[in-house]
Structures are given as structure tokens and as C-alpha cells.
Length: 547
Ligand code: C2O
Image (cartoon, rainbow, N blue to C red; front, side, top):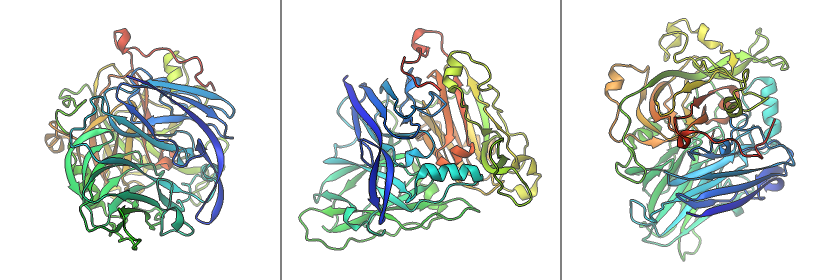
């Protein structure tokens, strides 16, 4: 195993996109930032220098951080932010996982421009499928013409979600369908008759995305750095945070084909996002330029296509790092997720609802709208046993039982208001945890991509309507469920996950739509230390950023 070192200079740079000049915060002046490649078992050491005017943290999305939770990166969860002019060295070993992950800022909206790919090659050098001719990261993103931090501050002050983005991007580029963008469209040159691997990452902030390539099917072989049974499709659906590795065989008539992505927008009662697709061009070798063929993308609200994709994936039994699903459950949680109203807080003067002052739009889990600490990170509070930062009393159930998919039929007003607090769930080392996420329609149904740090989980079931503990549990896939770190909980439906809490530390569990995280759709799972040194979280590094 090697030690792989990188320097991340987080700094402001000027860029021009969509006919606008803008100053963005980026790593080493690039958008996307550097692609990091390691082999499983390597130790990654990243020297982060914050030369930007903002508070920064860097999160390694999907990396287990086994006994290295201090390097996880979410702001005020495992560390305080790296202040302007300060630095932090994140050092961790990447074990028991291989495939495509990514890294991104985990503070305010900075991840809009602070992100990049993290590729973990197999230790053995072999994939459980024929070695592709070449591999390429395809990173989907979102772009705003305005300053995202200003936009965020304004949205928080008003108690409303931030503006929709001005473009979607492929590897940082909006593509041919946007103004002033043609010259910079991402182009992927391929040779006829070869098989390529595309490592697709959804780094967008607030939109799930459909991805297609005109006239081509592809085979999904892994998601979230975990192998799947080969699944042939002509469309992939990725929630923010998710990755999908596909094999693409270039066996069509030589020519130019667009690859394109645009939103899967499940939210009711919300302004629709922009529907112009971002495009890149797949170009077969040695061709005079022809104008590319455009794929037909699903409609913005095409939930059946999104559900078919996500529910058709299964894990590849016996592949590297695969483990059977735990059948005995120690901790069972039923967690409603959705939007709500919360008070604006002492300083804000927000007013979103006529005649109801001091309320803002919020989001919650079991009617707890997560309030991030500001004095100390949760992990420090846990490790040093500092009281008053959080309480380990996250409710295992919502306060009321009723039909979550039809609030009109029941008294849902008690569920509309979600107080803000820092209530977390504490579990014993090695406990098997099952969480059923139930989407609510209390302020509009919406597919929420739930992401857990520090773990992969088995998606043992998903469906529409209200979760039925008897009938739906009988249908759980305990044989080869897909293994992920982010699951899009179907709009107006539910998803059930299981994981084994074998990584002590504090792990945020949140909606990966950035505006919902900001609005409180989060909690943290505190996993206690185990009995031995190899199940005990070591002390923090000496340069851990302090508050
Ligand atoms: Cu990809 Cu908590 O993040």
C-alpha cells in the first residue's frame, strides 16, 4: 500500500461562463478540482490550505473513515471549519472499498464549486468484469451566475430556499445548449468497437439528474463504490451524492452523439428547476465534424423511470468487499422526512407565510429540524464528553401516527411545525441498525436522497405509499440488495436500509439536496467505541481546526 499525497489550495479564481464573469472558490484553480486516484489500502494525505475568504471543510463522500472520523469533514459535525488563512491535514486509509467516490466542501453552499472525483482502484488490479479500454470521470454539477455564498446568506435570512441554478454542467462545462458555452463543451473521443468505463458522479447541489447518451445503451456495474449485477439501460438516474459506473461499448455507427443530463424533479409545490440539458459529446475517432445526435431525455417529473432505475439494482454477491446482509436487527428506527416550518431564530426576521411572522421553511426528520452546533463539533463534544452541545435523544418515531401520504385525511398540523434542536441517535458499537425512511406529503412529496457518512448500507426495500411493517418487511431483499451510501427515498414513498455500526464516531445522516441539509433535514448517529483498541476512535490530530 502506498501513501498518496495531495495539496489542496482552496482559493478564489475568476472564470467566465454563460457570458458572465464570476469569481468562484475552487481547489487548485480548477473546476472540477483534481481527480484523486488511489488503490484500496492506500493512505491518502491531503494538505488543505484555505486561501479563500470563506470557512472551508472538505468531505470524502462515501469513504468509510474507519477509525479516522476526524478526517470526515462535515462542518461542526466532525470538525470546526478551516478559517481563512488556516490549514488542516486530512490523513486516512481507504480500506474495504473500491470504485468511484468523490470529495466536496461540506460547509454552506461551497460544494457548488469545490468538488472532484476520488477513484479507488482494486487492490488486485482486476475488476469483476472485463477490463475497460479506458476510463473517464463524468462529473455532473450545477452552476450559478451569482455568488453562491451571498445567495445562501440571503436565502437563510429570508427563510426560503435559494434560487435555482442557471445551468447544469458536465465536468464543469454547461455544454452546447447554453449561451456562450459551445467552445468549451466536454468532448469524449472514443475508438470504434471498444468498451469504456464512465465513472458518473452527481455533484449537483439541489437536483437529481437523468443521464443519457444518444443511441447507446450502457451497463451499470457499480454504484457508490460497490459492485452491482450488470444492469443494461439507456438511462441512469443519479441523486446528488450518488455515483454510477457504467460500461459503454462503442459499437454504433461512427458519428457524434450527445451525452446529456437534466433534472429529475419530484418536488411538488416548488418552482421547477431549469430544464435545459447539459451536454457533452461522444465522438468516434477520425471523423469530420458532424452535428451530434441528441438523446430524448425523460420528462422532469418522470418518477416511474427514476424508480425503475433505482429499484432494479442489486449487489454483486461475492464481489470484493461484499458482505451478507445482517438478518438480526438491534436498533429499529422509523423516520419521517420532509419539509416543515420552524421559527426563524433570534436574529432572523424571516417571514414566508402571510400573517404568520417569524416562521421559515424548514426540513426535518421525525419533526426534529437539525440545528448545527457552533461552539464545538459534535465529534469533539462526544470524544471529550462536553455537555450542552447535543442531546442523544433523537426520537425513534414521529410524534404522531397517521397516513403520511394523505395529510388531508388527518390532523397533520401538529407535524407541520418542527422545532430546531441538536438531537442525535446514539447506538452501541457493532449494533445492526435498520432505518425506514418515510417521505411525508405534509408540505409536498419529494424524493429525498438520504446519505449516511462513515458507512455503506443495504437498501433492503423501497416502495410508494405508507410503509407497512408487516407486508413490506416480508418483501425485503436480504439476499443481494444494492449497497449504497445515498438512497433517493421515493417521492411519497419509503426506503428501508440496514447497516452494521462497526465504525465508532459521529456520522451525519442527511438529505444530500444541499438546501434541505441547510434547512435541517439531518441528524447524526453517534456510534460508541467497542471493547478493543481496534474498535476505539483515536484522539484528534493536533491540527484539528478549532472553533
Ligand atoms: Cu456528500 Cu454529507 O455529504
